[in-house]
Length: 74
Image (tube, rainbow, N blue to C red; front, side):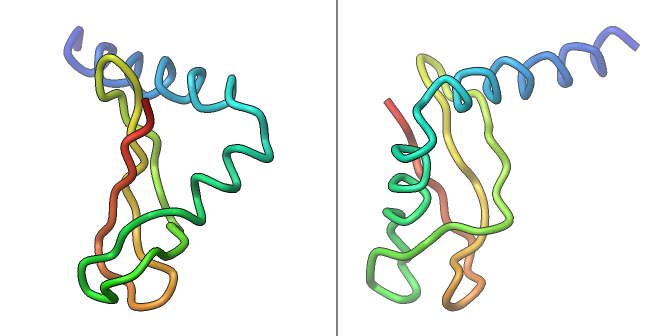
């Protein structure tokens, strides 16, 4: 059971870091993700915020093609 609690704590901490970024900047970051399938900068959708020490990462889908994409945020 302790392992499950640890997995829930990490997303909370990552989400807290994400929400500490101003809303306008978060929108810019969501719209500035590289998709290897589209070979272009795209918008990330259906993403989750993950802890990626020392910062965070967004992992989700390309709005254009649905390919898996990620954005690391320093």
